[in-house]
Length: 497
Figure 1 (cartoon, rainbow, N blue to C red):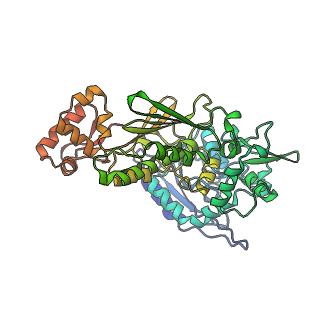
Figure 2 (figure 1 turned 90 degrees about the vertical axis):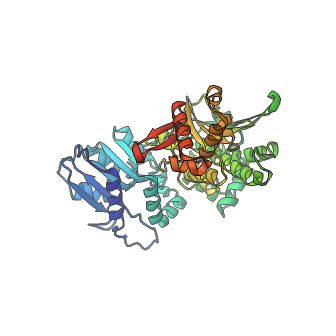
Figure 3 (figure 1 turned 120 degrees about the vertical axis):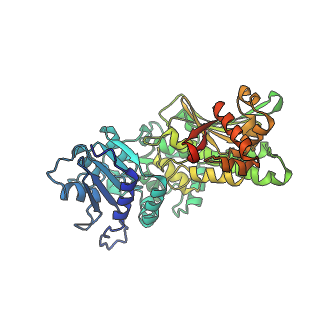
């Protein structure tokens, strides 16, 4: 294996630098090709690079690196860095091999991927092929992913519109992310909601009329319909997004809402129609039932509540799009109390994203269900490719709300949104809350919006003198609320989520 001193971040940055040297392929059809850079770190520490089109127009960076520069060389134990997801088997015309398969054949055990290839013939399938063959996959750091996307914005825009070439759509897929890509027996296009389809057509700017042959073909290219025996048949993804009653076919579909009012009264509401309509339906319900936000001052009520609703909407969309639909015994859930709004989504984040990355809001962009994500993004309901974590954190900070918290309660990934700054303290376990004096409770409320806490930032947020602040920080550590990082002048703290 390469040296233990290997700096993955440095290699990611090198791959991006190499990406910028990509040679565009001359084309008459106006199709934009991606800019791709690849870096190979060999077991002896040798580093080699390649970019798309470096030696011949159209050659993929991984192909150039593995086949043209290292044909016949043993690459066991090497590490590959590529700014774009390697193409999956069957994504290229026979007899060409997909880059993911070349990596497997080269016996490379570890790969760092910049961004997903948004072309539906590849999207997440290249990554899954690597993982299915025992290769450890990592994603580039989120800020570097944004650089790659910005550099390739023309290619990405075309790929998202293109869906897939018709002849590719007819080929058998060797990689399947989920059974929901397949058709569901005894279903027909009339099982789709016309209201949901019309809204999709309007927001996405689609000219083809709902129900027309051209519209059906568009849905087919997006993996929502398939033509079998001269008939159009919905796929699982199509039924989830646009089905009138998706839970007739998939009991795990839908969003279950519950508001817990004072005096023990509850109001349940199920959003079990087309999932593309569920986020806005849920937000209208919350706005109607929660007209008065919980906050300290009348002047701040409106902006705080608007921010809270935006955060709830983002959380609901993430839950519906990124949940694991193979966990059939669990549904997405929305729960409201006087202090919090929680959104539960079945399943851990898709590998290689970790719970720790979610909790620190530093998770790279990766979609578990690209077909769902594409439609939600076309309807302006989701960020183009990511989980919306960066904007979620920033929106809470701007409104003075505690930072949202992700936790894992098997089988749910749980997002907790706090309805006020005070909620962060009031929702602590009783035994912990009782262990804090009034000043400590106030101090805790003030730092729940901070990502990194030091003596200086605590003093600035609370107005307490440094010695008092240091006693508070020590107390928070003793109670398990904070985790100490570093030592001496470099000491900082992070909130234990």
